[in-house]
Length: 121
Image (cartoon, rainbow, N blue to C red; front, side, top):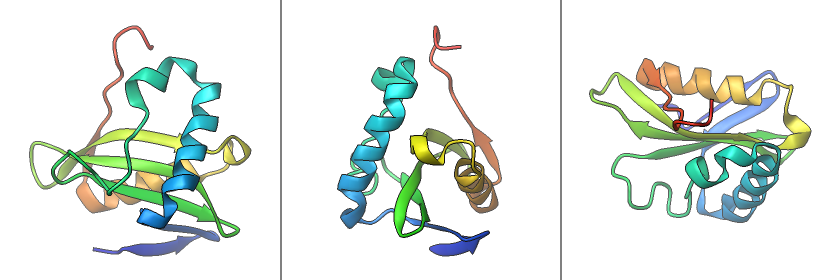
């Protein structure tokens, strides 16, 4: 499994404990723009999947800073997974960091599921 790739100048890599503060800040700032997701989807990334067996967290890094984070949860089989959260820093929205993370997740697991909590869409 690729733990780091570079696509169009963006680094896609596994979350590291050293990312905790940057990811927490990113999720808070991104959530301010999408208030309805705050209570449902704010990811807990400390410990790289703490409390969820098989969870993986991936980050997109641009210009030396974390600009997006994706939480990947196990699916019903090895070739599928669920997106447990996707946050893109406000200053990086409209770019392709989120798309790159989703494409990387699909390359790792195949089919991806995304659950939208009732009342949020």
